[in-house]
Image 1 (cartoon, rainbow, N blue to C red):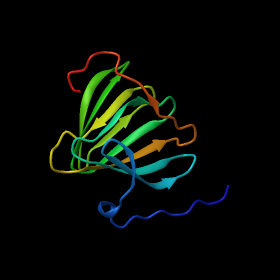
Image 2: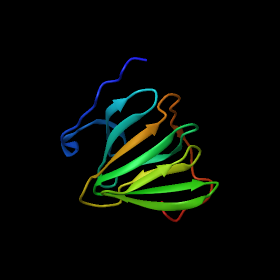
Image 3: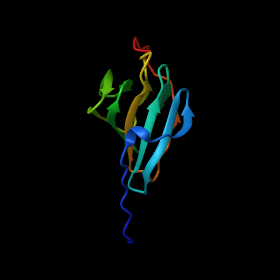
Image 4: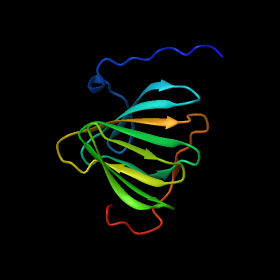
Length: 133
């Protein structure tokens, strides 16, 4: 196996990305079969709609601002408030969406898809009514 390159980002706050969802931009920082690391910037009121991944973990790391991750799975439902220096591991098969409910500050966070090989984004609705949406 060939050695992979080293990836370094000096200032993640300065990274911009391409539009993905309503009020959301994504910049891919690193991408291989084992993982994809993306920097997401979710503007106030922005949303990544409800979806799941059949094989992939979403590993969230908060950089700045605050985003709400609403989830529904076999082990329960809930809401995670992702803020600077916080972490959330979203397993395959768990329905989730990400919202910036703030009015002034972007929510900036890393998402590592592991593995990246076989990545899928399956749009779904929540099975039960949620009071979080």
